Length: 305
Ligand SMILES: [Fe+2]
Image (cartoon, rainbow, N blue to C red; front, side, top):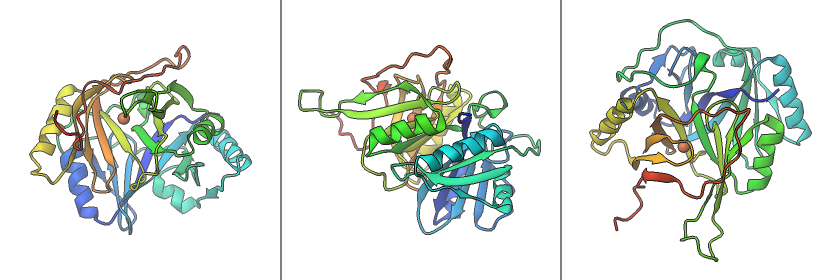
């Protein structure tokens, strides 16, 4: 009855051409046919799409699309959302077909982050071919580890954290606390919750921080080789400032992801990584990490010392 994976992401932009250029030439994801005007769909594997980029008034991350395994678990999560006092909007058949799923619903979490729920998959079996020669995106067997992870803000941290565990069935992987002011007695630290719903170390992370102006802190996509990360890093460096590099190459302590961060045309960041930790959810013991990276990940706003 729990959520299975991060199935897709819905993104809004004022500039579809900029997104197409970024998606194909920097990320290396593949354009897929879209039946809707002003909507771009991008594939990362054999799913019909993993990124849905729609034209709108804003530049922002709109919603993760959380996958459920069947109608029973879909109905069960809707019942739990309603019991938790969240408004749920069921989409019509045509809109569900636009997402190439059987049924679709929309809601939000207690921090105000939008979310979508769905079950059922359509496949057309067209092979994935990266326009930037990425060797592959890591989404697990059958795509069951999902497209990557999403990091959202939750000023009402405890309430939002409990919501995702109780309503969605996420489980704690790591309850990080990061001391940005040196870790003295006056430094309360910033709470993070890294949550799993399959073998991926985290599909969702929540940060105890003010609402992000672009709807998300970052979204992570994972590629098959270190060379794929390095070549993407080169593509950003060679973009002559068109693509902002948000953080240099580095490796995270908790999910062991070797990655860098860059800004999307919708203002939030994408983490582009390799070699993320796959856990066994049956035996995992929750950790508390008090560091972020064991090397690298120097943020653009940090001053050189
Ligand atoms: Fe991340």
